[in-house]
Length: 207
Length: 207
DNA sequence: CCATTACGCTACGACTCGTAGCGAAACCAC
DNA sequence: GTGGTTTCGCTACGAGTCGTAGCGTAATGG
Image (cartoon, rainbow over all chains, first blue to last red; front, side, top):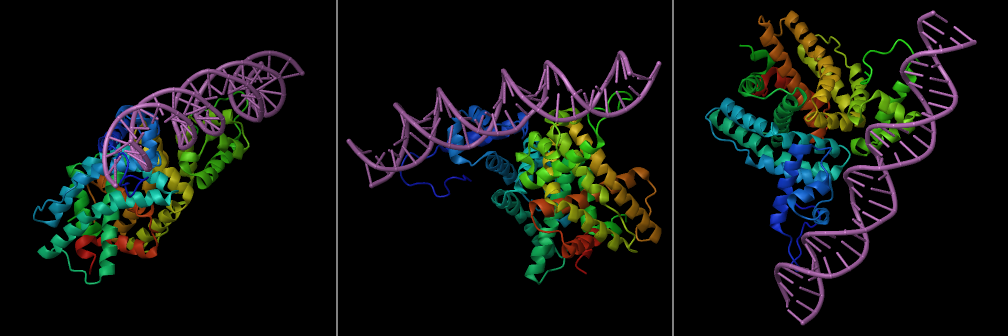
């Protein structure tokens, strides 16, 4: 997770793991109270009980710190087997929506995504630590549905990968847009309607 | 568009309309060159050839200024009648993707959305000047498709409004996620696949 | 014991912020 | 014209943040 030392030194005083956790927790707390723009690294250091210099030794800046702090929120996502594709989708989308509803995820995630449009390394960091890690949910749900016979098999691996990417963009994008732009809750009713649209499409969703 | 004087005074020296346009154009130019985080109001004022104080008289801050500067980009969206619902969707999504591909839209739009999570007035400003104004495209495309018999009529107005909101969240969210998070182009091939998924759903998209 | 690295603390120049104060300019009503 | 009103450009300012340097101390391994 650290950005400065991908390979920790074998000698010398080791970095405090407790300080690392305290800093990330303090970052999330500051995001809740202050939001992205008013969050300062000096304040985070004070909250975490460490010196500001310690913070700069481990993270290159605000962007990288917040990415790591937010990434931890998404690790709790799971895909419980509910028996049908529709129920699996509804379950995982509701979990995703619950995380996105938290203020530290809202203000932090969108801000770093915005910054990543001018910083390739930051975008790659987000992709690796958040996006790509959760794509497993789509892969697993799709495999399950194919085993059940709910979805046709996709023999071409390239085409299958494109399909998974497309589904991920649609699901994640819709929930994010609903939550942040429309500023309406992605509650059970909305998720039911979304799932029906995703499964049946515009032409079949009304039936 | 101004945030200070919703009702312009009848007396006194009027505000320069040319300065207004110059400021918004300078804001977009600064977004391209510097991005959101390094954009300063002092720099924008210099680029536009106005004093910094003039800028503060018209906009409350960086957030409001960038919202207005970005909103103008989306006014060029149109919905040409291509004969079928699929073709209409592909056309408007491609236009939307083309706008989002521009760096001033990327870095500016996401940043203000992130800020809007902690600022209700800013969120309402975004909703009114960008989101709600483009929802007309969904409404018109839907009406056309219903006239053609491609989509069933929706007698309940409340249900119809929810459907339109859902479609808008899915379309806009997917394009934004594809462009900004996945950082892949929303080109014709992707738009074709997305349109098929939107129309037929997961179960019917493979046929 | 010694080399090495992390840590806490202080201090610093550079920068941006948003505002105040001023005289001049542009408009309207009379 | 003349007076009243508002905007404009300019300068200057205190406040706050940034990211780094320097120093002595603490913790680990050989």
